[in-house]
Amino acid sequence: MNEIVTFGCRLNAYESEAIRARAEDAGLKNAIIFNTCAVTGEAVRQSRQAIRKARRGNPDAKIIVTGCAAQTEAENFASMPEVDLVLGNKEKLETASYADFIGAAERVRVNDIMSVKETAAQFVDSFEARARAFLQVQNGCDHRCTFCIIPYGRGNSRSVAAGSVIEEARRLTEKGFPEIVLTGVDLTAYGADLPGAPTLGQLVSKILKFVPELKRLRISSIDSIEADPELMRAIAGEERLMPHFHLSAQSGDDMILKRMKRRHSRKDTIGFCEDVRRLRPDAAFGADFIAGFPTETDAMFENTLKLVDDAGLSFLHVFPFSARKGTPAARMPQLDRKLVKERAARLREKGEKALAAHLQMLVGSEQTLLIEEAGIGRTPGFAPARFNGEATPGTLARARITGATPKHLIAELAA
Image (cartoon, rainbow, N blue to C red; front, side, top):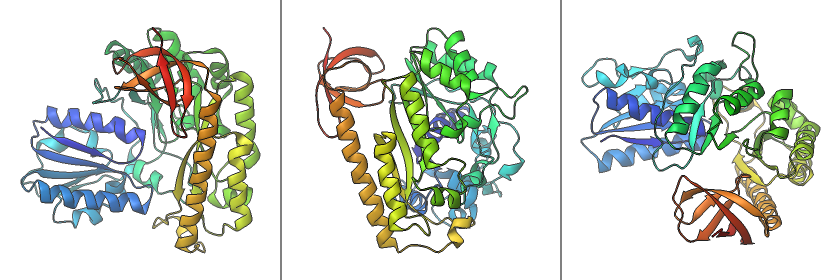
């Protein structure tokens, strides 16, 4: 039996299931495969630490390292004596990569990711210990934000044709998953490279139309500035499209956004949230933020703190700025690390308070929970809920919200 260790985003989680299937198809046994993340230096450090620990605990296992950090820092991992093979992001999804590497001279197999022009549909039939399924519809990114190394790990933007997406959504639904999450590196860039340039909103509408058995469809992190009219219509009219939207905000200060080379302004983030709330009053919002970006002053950081309230954000993912070698931001004047960590802590605290207030507002409401595991479920707005009683993971259950803690709802299942 092989073990897959996943770091990072939902797309990596999805691809880890494809890796599992490819490795099994190749007949690989007794391997530990690390699907790494390169978004921060800390993520890379954690991967290396986990690899060393795995080798100590499993001296006879084959250790394979792949993912974004392997793509961008192949020699870094190849230099580790614990590692048997390094695979790039293209190679990790090919059965042949796992069939012939033991004893092969080519220990590092990392392609030029910029040469990859297509993203093939990865048909994944199961998601271990998950109540929902992820479905990759896009990969790569054409933008070059000054802090981001990911385009060099994922390549340029590539989309999966709608027919293949619908086919996989149907397969996953038939497997019994009540909820599917659409994933990608730059999800709202979907379709620009396909004939006719279809949009994410058009894809969402087609999935809901042609897979009527699918109970819940969710979209992962989006760039609000790229939300197309069809997506807004789906938000307004499709109850099966879940009302939780996670934004790639990064900052609440216009100057910092400009230095990050983002395409949106503070006003754009607030405006998107207001527009969606008008269409879907039950909508909930989250956002990614970077604290301590180079040149960020106290006043600039205060603008980010204030955006949490001004946009009504409840679910925050906060990253202390991490300089990635090869990015323009790494060459900018850096802030003291202690200050960066302090700002990240303040922003997380702000997020915790915002989440607690959001959860309190849901007390007394009726919700349909997706049961994730015994006693734990999620509302359509992605709020976590705990309950007493029996409910099967991977099913939907009606519940009344009877209370809230700062971190989760307290629910009572309907009889």
